[in-house]
Length: 472
Image (cartoon, rainbow, N blue to C red; front, side, top):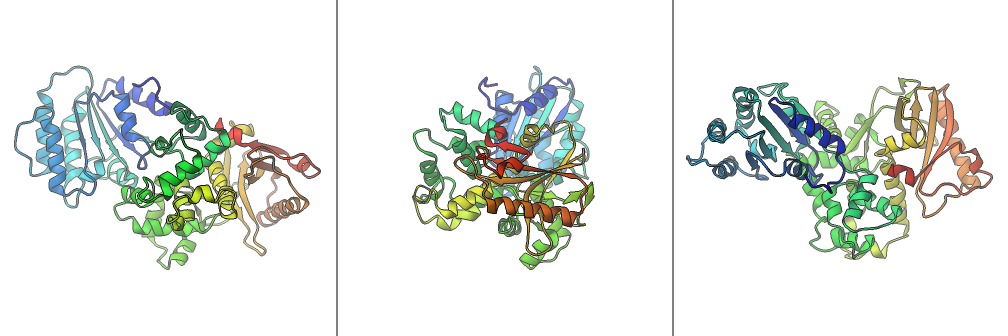
């Protein structure tokens, strides 16, 4: 494995355990498009596979069988092209049985969901292959990989047919953290200050492939114009491609995330249904669950004192690239938009909202900064149910009967709490205490880029978390 490989420490540890287990292993690897699944597996196993095949995006049944057969020919198969998947896996067994057994035999099938065309019987054939051959071989590691996360979970991880409870390990690859992003950029000779890295993260998230497209010869603004706003840019159509890779019927999912993109604090299932003028039924629940699996949205329940404030959960958009696209997709006709609109109200407003999302995906780092590593917590946004509407960016409810009531601000320097801002924060705190009837102690907490400017109002803040803390 490349000694300069960035991040994925937990995943590599798990793969090492699997490699040394001495028994048959069936590993399902999944995660969103471009997150680095294929690269991880190829690097870890040093591209040494007894067999590897990759599905064809939107391929027909015949095309998928052709791709699979071509891969078998590469390891010595000389028969005709199988007509069914049962025949294909029988052929794979025969060609693998003829190979000399030297250490682990790793069978790697990438873009697995592509092989499962309508009425193809692919999943049943894969289950039969595992149950009757691979699982009986102590030297076999079967690794299947796919970007269609909901398909992988429904058909492999939680399958109720031949693959029920057959996977020995599941490996879900998430995006890089800010710290991993910083390390990755440095490895590519991109030495930007942390504020620039944070803004990069706001746009691209921690998606390794997106980050790999950045040029050290350009500023962040020049990179973003080239990658997103220019004609035929590499990421200009990525939004649609992302959802098409995650879901076989992406349009309902796109409508949901667009509704959530218009509502910062999130919506309940009923509110989403009302917004989209659809039924609040099991289909919508399944779609929301699938979006959760992909880390596009998060589900949270407002709890105070361990009891839900409402019977309904809220769903909140957390995918940063999606938020960026929804905010600026109408500007794609302006090729140098980002350079021309730095420090304008539309960009500054988006920066504030995007920084809140960055904080949401770095709650572990915020907990560490607050000394809460060993204390159980719940975290959520909160909005008032009365008029005037009050909102709190982040509530961290702690098992020690305290609540960090967090205000999140993104600025270019120390944040100055004015008399008006101080009064707004006090009003929100009062509304939260009044409506939730909480008996927990309230700890005013501010999460900012560079801390607070010291004045008569900053002294009321009990805890501060800085941008640097998010890089832990």
